[in-house]
Length: 67
Image (cartoon, rainbow, N blue to C red; front, top):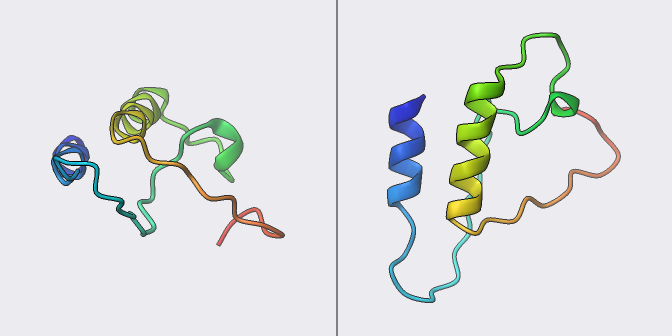
């Protein structure tokens, strides 16, 4: 998973280009996003750091907890 997050972090455009990342990453940002007790705080912290570093904004998924 570390290699995936490194690759994702390397995808960012180097200029002010608007861009979008879409996918089901099978990663969670917080325990509330998980539907079982298998939450990895270390991995979530790395995922959140990658999201923050890329200045990504998570769009809300309305009317359903999980896909």
